[in-house]
Length: 109
Image 1 (spheres, one colour):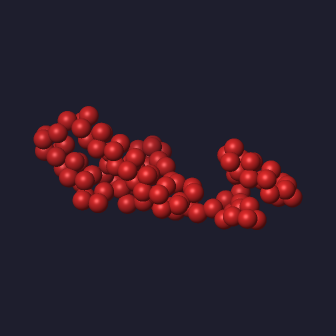
Image 2 (tube, helix red, strand yellow):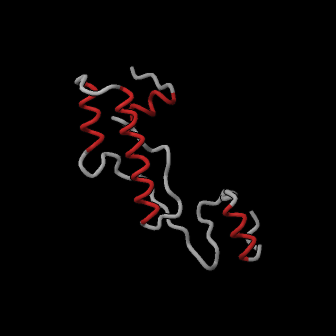
C-alpha cells in the first residue's frame, strides 16, 4: 500500500479492507484492536452449557445456540467499548489447542 496517499484516500482504502500492514493508521486516528475476548460469558454460561450437553440435559442445537448467543454478545460488548478491529474465529467450546490440532491435522503420538 502506498503511504503517501492523502488522508481521505487512505481512509477509504482502509475501510475497503485493504490493510496488509498491521501497523496501518491514518494521521488523524489510530485504530484499536484486541487479540481475543474471554469466551465463557459473565456467568460462565458456556461452561454450564457445555457440561449440560455432556450430561445429556440439553441438545447439540441448544449448545450451538448458546455459543452463537455468546459470540454475538461479546462482539457487541467490544463494539460498544470502541474497539475498531474486533477479533473473530477465536471461539472454542472447550479447548482452543485441541481445535487447532484438529484443524491442522496434527498427529499426536
